[in-house]
Length: 294
Image: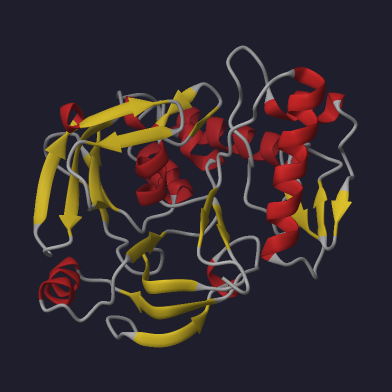
């Protein structure tokens, strides 16, 4: 698919890790921030605009997405190490690439990014994290784009950052890039940490199935997976969607799931856990688009 070109009625199944969902009314993969600004300024993109990274933390509903879907992965993918010891990375760079690049520069504390199955843009938007670390622990500043097509640099003070949640005091802005600062360490040790984390991920997560990673946030002083497992929901199935037998906080597509199957199983899990444990699980995944018939 040609980059920097607006496409119509594009099936989004190939652009999300659950492999479900309908079509985007308009669709764009852009590899140039200046071109993206121009397309927005000249009103060539239908509103609303939805930015998508790897689609790895996303449920696209079966009725598709109105407006324009802009996919960052495969587009904005520049990454470099500057003279201020900062790593500059565009929003379409995968988190695993950020981890490997940082380790290769002999920087420490970035290995956890190898366990985040998404892009830098998505990680910034939700303060993604794992293994005790979070994205915004290492952010120095970010580059945003607004609905006027203007690009603006911002720092942490412009955001309210919480567990799996980032609120911007300036509405209708989207992440284009970020500058990270990691402490200096040992290249071999940093690369070893990445290998260990990837091995742990492989052993504990159903990576051979279409899934969107952790479906729910961990409640305070608890774990979503444990709560779901304690409610005997491992293996529970609706249509082609199933709670993973390997990790209860993962919902897998057995091959013929619809987005509605997945959404229904999410709601069912929330209902059962609340009934049995009096805990309301909050989604970690984001849901976009329209249901069929709406």
